[in-house]
Structures are given as C-alpha cells and as structure tokens.
Length: 75
Image 1 (cartoon, helix red, strand yellow):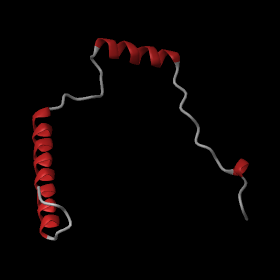
Image 2 (cartoon, rainbow, N blue to C red):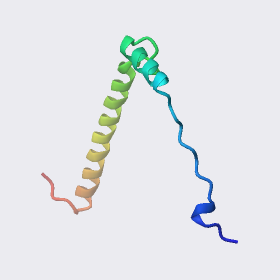
Image 3 (cartoon, one colour):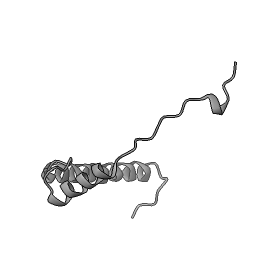
C-alpha cells in the first residue's frame, strides 16, 4: 500500500514563547549565557599554514612531473 502525502506524519515545529525569546535575547546582550566557547586560534592558524605549505609542495611536484613528461613547457 502506498502512503499519500497527507498520511505521512510531519515533524511539528518547535513553538518558542515570547518570554523564552526575551530571556535568550537578554542573556545574549549580557553575554553571560552564550553557547560558544572561547577558541584558541593559534593551532588553527598553524594547521592552515601547514596545509598551505603541503599544497604548494604538491603543486610543485605535479608541475615537475608534467614538465618531465613533456606535457608542460618548462619556464
């Protein structure tokens, strides 16, 4: 038996009260109950630098391999 669209149960949307929204807004303005934690950016910047270096190195190797294969003109 094939279910019709009208028979498929839909997930109900959450209904947030105005009181709850006001409490969240006030907490955000006071910056005392935020969900985001402070993030240490130093390891992230180090990883970005490492990945950039690896990309450059691999691009160099690919360029050398293509040059040796005669598919890319040497500079």
